[in-house]
Length: 114
Image (cartoon, rainbow, N blue to C red):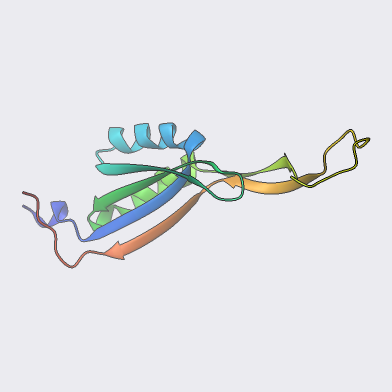
């Protein structure tokens, strides 16, 4: 294994489910390998995808370019779940930030491919 292929970092990227498809396509086309973990959570209980991406530190900036291109935070209005009088017609709304990505970069002490 050459030093350019050496996996010495792992990136954990939690992205919104609706943005994950485009990101996975970009990563695959650029030769990144990843493991996907589906989850759900947060304030909105919407689907979230966690990608585990092993890479050489020299490719980290390229990976971050893909994440910035595909994972944009945006604002959305959501109804608030509160008890209201029966005559209230419109539910209260709050503005929430959705989408984007949370990225963790960890150094890998040891990597083996069996």
